[in-house]
Structure formats: structure tokens, C-alpha cells
Amino acid sequence: MKRLRTIIILLLTLVMLNSCNIQTPEGYYGDDLGSLYEGCKSVYVSINCEEILSNMDLLSDGLAEYVPENGIILKKKEYLLVKGDTVLDLLIKVTKYYQIHMDVLEATTLGSSYVKGINHLYEFDCGPMSGWTYYVNGEMPGVGCDSYKLSDGDIVEWRYSVEE
Image (cartoon, rainbow, N blue to C red; front, side):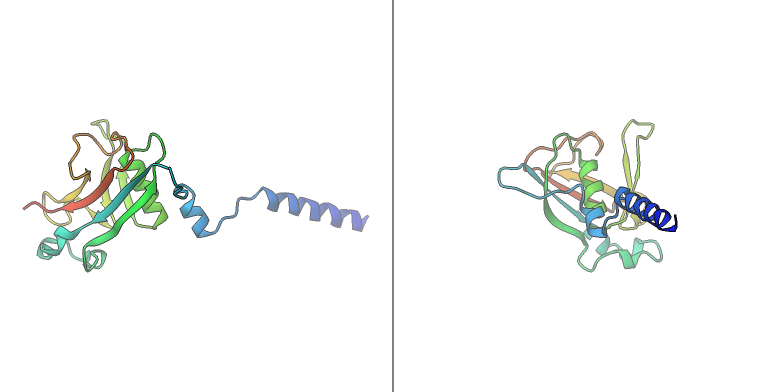
């Protein structure tokens, strides 16, 4: 009887362990990015706060540690384009993968999402007109980042702008 109980406990333990989804940090953070394969469509993304470097006197106290020496939070990288991905989808995947802090206000009263902060740098942290803006192929689109659908070869750049 004692042996049967031990076997049942072992079987239950195996079933429980088999049903758990245990992942390494690399597996968790890398799930959505996939790999680039020849013939796949891709996009490029970068994140920078270079404008802050020439306006450090305006930066809120205690935030200098979040401003990289060269102003580049994420240098230009290439990613697999998933059909239907928006600029916001890409930002979420990239910041998750590289473990970069990001804060977004989803579906505001204006009907679109708004990126409040990246890398602990928020709107108004470097003056009353400062904050995050995005560009696609060098142009500032006239729609929210959750509405702009990406195309093959698009270059997305997130910039922290400081307007005095």
C-alpha cells in the first residue's frame, strides 16, 4: 500500500511538472521576435534621447543616470515584420526583448495609445514640451503609434524631443 501511494505521488508530481511552462529569461523575453530568414520581410528600429544631452540643465533631478553617454538607448536593429504589426507592437516587442523600461497609456480618449516613457524618461522630464515622438522613414506620421501599420523595410526611430 505504501509503495502504491509513493508511485501515485511520483506520477502526480510528473504530471504537474509536465504541465508547467518554465522558461529562461532569454526564452521569455525573446518569444515574440523570432528569427530573420532569407526572404522574410523586416523593419528597423532605434531609440534615442540625444536631444537631452544638450539640455541636461532642463532634465528633472535624478534622471541623468537613465541618459546614455551617447544618447542612444537602442541602436538601429533589424526585426522580423509580422503582418499587421504597428509601430507600437514593434516597440513593445523590442523593449520587452532588451528589457528596456517602457510605459504606454493605451487607448486614450483621443482613440490612440500614447507612449509616456521609455528607459525611465517621461514626457515633461526635460521641459514643458519634451516627450517621445516616433518617425517612420524620416517622417513624423500623422497617426498614433498604435495605428501606423508597418511595411517591409520601414525604419522606425523613437526620439525624445526637447522643445523649449
